Image (tube, rainbow, N blue to C red; front, side, top):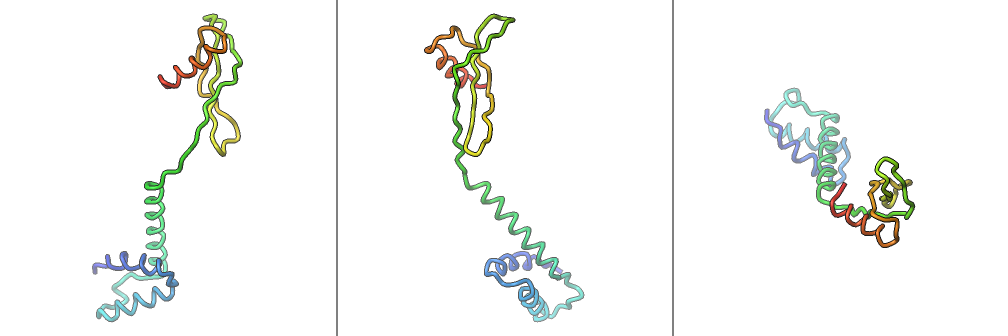
Length: 132
């Protein structure tokens, strides 16, 4: 027996906050009114619970897909130089942090041409334009 209509009506009953027992009673009376035997139809409170859970999961996925939560990232450098002895160049650490993060993360160690204050931001900016 085709019971697709149960999968469409149970979420409606859930949205109007009808209890499981009242929903079960309402659906069983509709099945009986349709001259079907309750032994043929596999309707139980567990079936209602599963359909309600499926509907909640679908709603949750729709909300996740359609709502954009802004994540504000802050990228900064601290101005401390790191020396690499192999190629004898100065490096500067680029950090990223966001609201809710307990620790900052090191995004990269980018090389700089000179250890001057004007060369540091240009090095970070060129790294961010190129990407990691």
